[in-house]
Length: 54
Image (cartoon, rainbow, N blue to C red; front, side, top):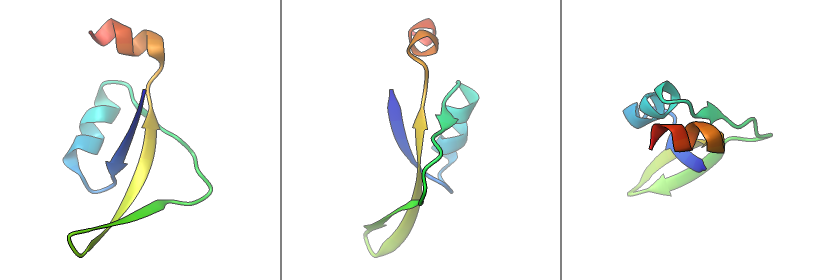
């Protein structure tokens, strides 16, 4: 399972706390939302850990 998190978003730390890890990419993705620049990180969780949480 993948999740794209805004680096400054508190949800980013919540996802890390339950087992998501950062995906190492060559570049950080940047999105523009309502006139703001958002730098995002891609995250992944192993399927076995995801199912254990449900």
